[in-house]
Length: 265
Image (cartoon, rainbow, N blue to C red; front, top):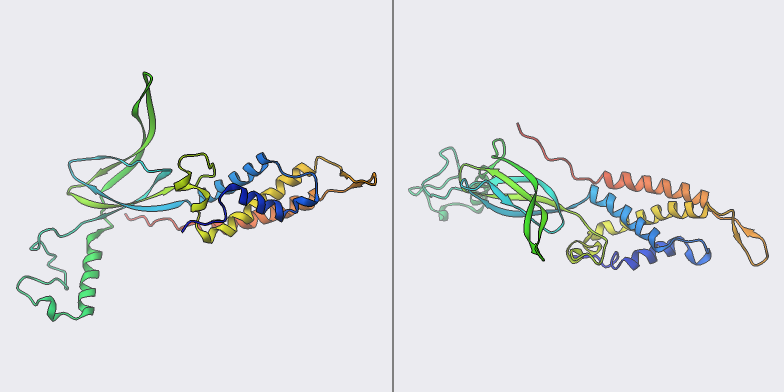
């Protein structure tokens, strides 16, 4: 379910501004500074916890090249190759749970027997140690022409080599984007970040904003007050505080990075 906290962008700006107490000091962050804050937070988030997807793909021995364009795709992480017994007589002689045509019917099996048999068959269909070869490659593809000028785009292409027709489960990742004017925003905008990550995202924005604000305030010796004096600015405290918080949050999100997929020889 989309979150209702990080969209529109003004909600993040308002949260960071109120957390920093903007109403009490004249030297504050500008719109460009907030853009930097959100961009930095999103860059780290995309690099650590991109959005994972799974999609089924039918492949055949007669075809090797499969264009795989998806909105905001960064790359393909993994392919699972799945095979099935298409011919009823084509059974595994070592399958202890197979039901032959001359054997007992399903009415003679308990629920536990059925589930155990189905689980065995499901695991047997998944080829792990000897998966077919595949690789991904970004290619420049012509997509049309405008006023006599050819138009091209970078397209992800999968090259898959299989011996038989089969089904492939493709796992790929996409990025989140912050630009509300981007046509992809409705699919990949800040509102699509999982709700459980909203708090982290806002906290990181505040920590990053403290460091930028500290750099801005550090350029001034103080802020003139109505009495003719100068009120000191807390740039040193902000810088140290923001740096510590940012480091803690970076460690926190990196600890949640999904583990690498196992490598089978």
